[in-house]
Image 1 (cartoon, rainbow, N blue to C red):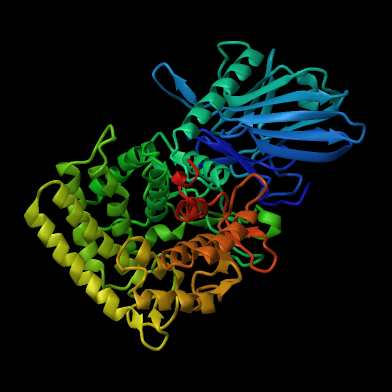
Image 2 (spheres, one colour):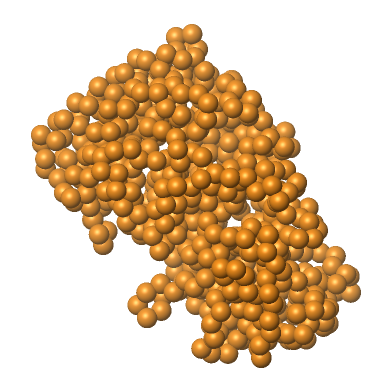
Length: 594
C-alpha cells in the first residue's frame, strides 16, 4: 500500500462524499451519508484488510490529477513505462431533474484510454461495520452485489465482470464505466447513464461557480474553496459538517484524533458567512432549516456545540482498537465527547448564523417575527452565561474559565438581536438588546485586557494568549485601529507565530503544548493584519499559505510549521473559510482593472 497522505481530492454531491488519492484510489467514503460507515477506509487502515477501490495500471511510472475547472469532477491520469495510459474520471451526480436537486448516493467512475494498450487491475474491496465485516459478493448479468449486514451496494459496469470479480489484469481497449450505489436496476444503459450524468453534473457546477461574486485575485483558489464548502452541506437536513474524516491526528503521534463528521454550530456559521460573502445564500437558507430545529427543540435552554447531521444529540465517543489509524497513528474515534461540553459561544454563533436572513431581500424564505422570538430565547441564554466559565471554543476537556471568545460571541448575540429588532421595527426590544450588548462589551474590554501582557487575554482576568481574540475585530466589537487591538496583534505574533503559521494558544492543554499550527488562526492573523493596515505583510503570508494547499487546492485543519506537512481532519471547512475571507480582504478591487 502507498503510505497515506492528505494529498487527496474530494468528490461529492451534498449527500455523501469520497476522497481520492493521487493514484485515483478511493480511500475514504462513508455511506449512506457523511457520518456513516466508511465502506472505503484505507485512509485509516493501510493493512491488507483496508477497504479501497483502485484501478491499478501495470508498470505505472507517472500520475497526474486535476479537477475539471469550476466543478467537482476529478480526473486522474496514470501512465506506464511503455507510454500507454488511462484517465479516471470520478464524480458524484448532482443536477436538477424533475424540478428538484438530484443527488443519489451513487459513485460514478469512467476509465478512458489515453494511448496505447494499457493493462489494469480493478480492486474493488468495500467493507462494512468499520472494516470488521467483508461483504458477501454475488454476480448478476451486468452487475456485482456487495452484501453487508445493513447495506447492499451494487456495481453496474461494462468492464468484464469476471476480471473485476477475480482482480485479474486486463487490457483496457475502450471506455469503461462503473456505477456503485444502491441495489437498484438502472433505467438506461451503463455507458449512457454515466456520460449523461457526468455532463449534467459538470454543467451544474459550472453554473453554480458562475454565480459566485468573486474577488478579482485568486479566483481559482476561491472557487475551489467554495465548492469544497458547498460539498460539506448535507442538503437533506441543512447541516454542515466540519470535515469529512475522523481521527487524522492534529500532529504526528499526538493522540489528538477526533471525529469531525458532525455539525458544529460555530464552524457552520463561518461556512455560511464565507459563502454569503460570495453571494451564495442558498447554503444559508438550507442551514437555517437545520438550525431552527435545534433552536426550537432547545426551548431557550442548553444548546450543544455540535449535533449529528440528522439532528442527533447523542454522539457517544468510542475508540475502535481494531483499526490502526492514519499511518498507524491511532486511536480511531467515532463520536465526539464535545457534545457534552458547555461552550457558551454557541449562542452567539446561532444568532450570527441566522442574522443575515432578517436583512437579505433575496431569500426565498426570509426570517421574520416568529424566528426573532426563538432567537431572543437564545440571546437570553447568551446574556445570562456571558461571564460564566465554560470549555471554550477549543473544547478543553479538563479546564473551565470565562473565555474571552465565549463572552465575545455572547456580545455578538445581543448586538445582532438589537439590529434585527431595528429592522423589524421593535424599538423596545432594540433598546433592551443594545443595553445588554453595551454591558457585555464594557466587561470584555475591561476584564479581558491584560496590563502585564499588553494584550487581550484568553480569559477574564487571565494572562495567557489565544488567537481567538482576533475575532474581536471580525465581529466588530472593537475598531481594529484601537491601540489595544494593535498591541494584541503584536503580542500574538511574538508568542504564537512561527513564520507564516499561528498556533491556537500558548498555554498547555490536556495533551501538552500544541505542535502544529491551526490553519484558521493563520488566516485570522491575515485578516487582522489587513485591518490594521499591514496589507503587504498579510499578502505575503497569504501567498505562503496558498502554497501549502495540496495540489488540488484543499487544506486540512493543521500545518506543521517546520515540515509544512498537512495534519488534522480533511478537508477542513474552517481552513477553506479562512482562504475565502483572506482573498476577499486582500484582493485588488474589480474597478482597478475594468
